[in-house]
Amino acid sequence: MSKTSAEIPTFDKDDSLSHSIFGRIQISEQNRSGNGYAKYSVFQESNLPDNSDTSEDIKRLLVEDNFPPVVAFSSTLDSHKENLGIRQTVVFEHVITNIGGGLDPNTSIFKAPITGVYHFDAIVMSHHGEDMETEIVKNGNGLVRLYSGNGDTWGVGMQSVGIQMNAGDDVWVRVLNNPPINDGNIRVFGSLWSSFSGFLVQYMSPHIQLYFLARLYFWFSMFVLL
Image (cartoon, rainbow, N blue to C red):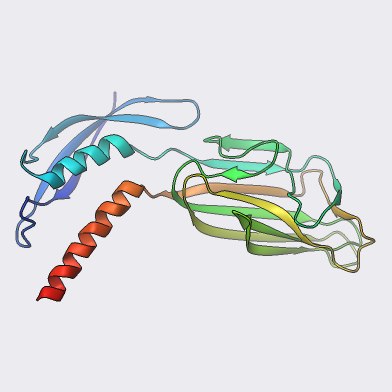
């Protein structure tokens, strides 16, 4: 069993500007499940005053929020996609990696399992002599666009985006438009040339966000009163 410790700044009940204490929290790893989620529990707590509301909040946050899981996925196209419609989702049926289970393998829609900052990449190849437009969308709203093709040969459009997501938010790739150069059939080239990937960059606990926002509000209020 491995053990790690972290120093967490806490404040006394009177929120004195000139006094703060540090509570040392020792945490031991209990187990790690196969989907990348690590489970931790508080092993020992010391030097935290019993009469401090703030320190009790810190204890609760450490127990509830634990440590962030690993979230990452990568998928690609095995077969060519044809006769796609405007705003239709591009389904990347070959799932290479899906740590955390956020990607639906049937729809290629990624649902954020936890709140945090995520990074996404999309690569879309057009068929020979054709152009096509796609986009990465979040909850139905376009984020970045891809243009694939040059009218003479196969063409690849690539885009990356980093965004903040709340748990439950969705991201996917869909058809944006059908350029006039095409014959009306919107196609995406497969054979592993087109792909959709993403991963969690930084976990953002809603509880800890609220805690530090409250602290920021307190300091701002004190500054205004001065």
